[in-house]
Image 1 (cartoon, rainbow, N blue to C red):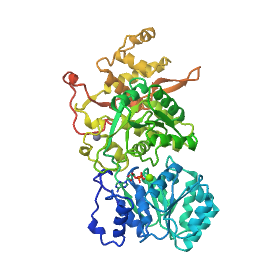
Image 2: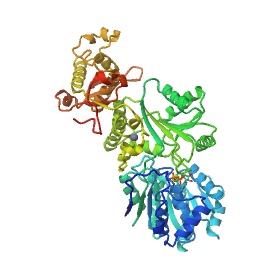
Image 3: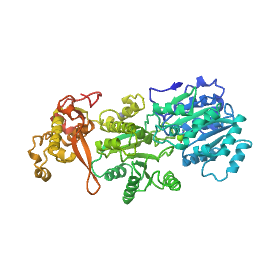
Image 4: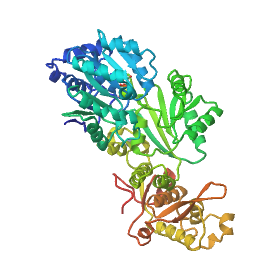
Length: 585
Ligand code: ADP
Ligand code: MG
Ligand code: ZN
């Protein structure tokens, strides 16, 4: 296994000029450079493109892990149009019809001889004729379903194989073959027999979303051997990461963000469910924005329609589930908003990566990613834990772990967002290279540290009291009691007589909110859902499984926060430098 990993994390948009002197003596090099310029009209390669192409032309299996927009297509399209080292037809398997037709049209514009065969192809005869005749097309784009089901295609492959005219199998969006991924496609499974049927045909697998487990899984399923592995850095230098807490109605937050910073610009809003997409798109339209929804339950005609209107700028905003994204190549996207928390950082990253496509290397098109934390933390973790759609306890456990990582990411207001995200992909990143391109790096006010272990003890004991007296209390109410609020709801229930009443009076609201969130996250307190008569759920507080650790002081609670400039001198906690973990004592 060749591993080409860059620790330096250069941005994928920068055109990396490989040391061409090393390659110049390569027999394929001259034609590669010629075709790059003549056919694709590009000047230079991005990181690992040339290496990938050379390995492919040497007949090796290749695995390419590059963020979306990184330039994976060129890695197989260029070898396919070369005459040296690439005899015959390159077969490209791709999961989405729209993706395939986009690519095929783009290739036709470049005068590349290319065929497309999927469920929408009307004239099979013509395709067979072309594949059996001469000259043969350089590329055949085909859906996995056709490979699985079409006997005619199988016999053509057999013939091509016999005459040595199958240049290469390309499995694009290869994560679809892995059951570990969130995009698993049934039809991709048939690809695991390509190696057995056509053992001497090299295979290239490409994806933007795979951690190590998935890479291994994909390699195993496709039976790749002596595989060259290339990984482009997942840092997107042109993405600015912002995380905001939901303060009002979330749709108001979204609208304010768009109208104040991105009026009339193109963007994507991700939501978790189909209903949510439709609702949010409707709300945006009511407010005069050109928005439409996109989700998996729409017919392909409807999907194509939305995609087309978006590509041609007739609509500005697509409100979508994760079904929207794979392979999208649109240069003028300016913002991506996560209306709901993504289920995993994996998902978050792949959704983010897809939009950062830049054509002119060096140009720093800024795309803002805004993650609005709209969920009650524990609600989210509980949802993952109790998720009915997940059959096995292991799957639920995994989901819960993933949800926790997303929460950690959101709650961590001190470490660079890039450092945090890239770490997830096993990539080291130097915070200084962020150049203040995330919310945590761009603050001018220094982070302060505050030990709230005693206050945490008081909160836990307050919640224990409520349980002991069988009172159902929401998190908001509990926080109000602890703050010492003087409301009817508190007076009526005599909660102003409790010993912990106003125990957090000396803390400002932001810190109080953080404290409660942290305690939820640490599972010192828990929000449990109780179904009301009307069928809706209410969330009430209970002591969590880790309550004791807080009460007996085994677990300390240290928060980092950014005081407003005027408060700096009055609060007096010690300034914090460098980074450390905010959760462990
Ligand atoms: P991926 O499949 O990795 O998501 P694509 O192959 O669709 O990415 O490429 C994304 C964009 O980058 C396309 O517009 C493509 O033309 C452009 N691109 C690819 N390679 C280069 C390069 N070497 N120089 C400039 N632009 C490139
Ligand atoms: Mg692609
Ligand atoms: Zn940063």
